[in-house]
Image (tube, rainbow, N blue to C red):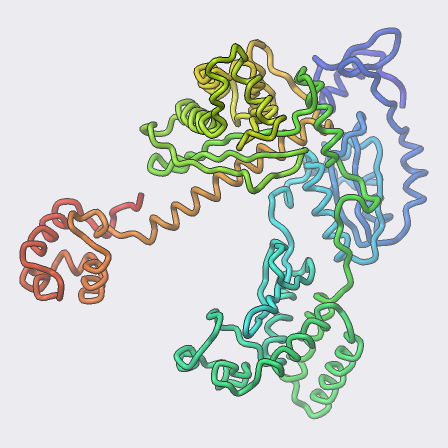
Length: 566
């Protein structure tokens, strides 16, 4: 495609939002971006020729813009047909504004073939999370596909769905892209092998009295000793072989034969049930690979290169091998929390994550909250790393901390870079607190989410790192992880608060008193309408406390049905 040489071509380029006017310059007929030459785009005729070489196979395609950045990731049952729909788009397809903008921005593409549709779904999800393309909306969160977990160390193991693979001694199978088919498959395995589905680790007679699974022949009832542990584990191993895909051909043939036999006997209801079971098993047990880094697939997650690039862009003395990122979560004014996540060598260091409840800030004030959490974090680090020899030394505080780290005497190593989620306001508060602690030269930046701007102390203009650069993606990963960790803590506090009651705020209320009162009256509303004598008649409740309780409820619980939880 020709190099831009006219204002008209420039306006067309800007209209497509492929590049900003401030970043594009010309000289001597050459096109550059941020000081480097932009690679030439592929002519339309070359795209059509490349399209003819695409096979009729399932796979994943990556659309690239004029600068080579990946702007869209998609999957297809037939790659040739799907890509043709972009380059030979109908008027109906181009009627959608987003689709038309995407098509106008495509200058090249890349494909990766897989064995089946299930693999294409898994690979598409992985690449979207890696690249975060501009035109992809779905699959950008941190959710993962379902796994099946079996903890063989339990007395009576059961099949459990899980999204996270942990190093806990359990056996994991998957991931499985079809969640509904997986649920139906597990339900069939539980019925077929008689696995328990109850939650107690060691079910007993009391659990059996409240269970109907044995009555309808869906459980082998290990809680009553009807089956021994050795025989139960043999069934578990058989289920594991099925989930691994071993012997599935014989299993499918057997179910298909039962289905045909039921249909021949005019038992169409059972035949339809077996048909659905067979379809779910075929979907679930379709062989898929786990797509991870280092298997010849494209990936922007290259920690060593990203760290070196980030250190160079920020003007640091070297790659920031240890980074700490802070985020404030303001769901309500009652539970303001903060998170600190730590990355070592570009990867999460989960053991050194920290979470905080804001103590000194009234209301929602992100700036003051950021100042508090920075102050608490690094004053604690300095206290734990206190060095008696430093009192008589002329050494700068930060240099002394680095020396302790090199000598292996620092309990907590100070980071090479601090990142605060926010703009100039949050960054200014962080710098102020670090200066007050004597950590003047500790590198710190702010990352504003709206335009992904990087703010550096002492610099009036923000730094905008191109979206395709690994340095920005590294900053986004640590920022998103801090955001996730803070929100998770807020959810924990919210669930804990939901379990509380208005009674917890009453003076003199104990857990025992609360329990007996709710057992007697059933709800706080009924308790409020009860007489003082009726309340005093409850065991462990005195007449004096009954009077105090009623006064409290009628003063602070005037509208219990509309009282918001906080």
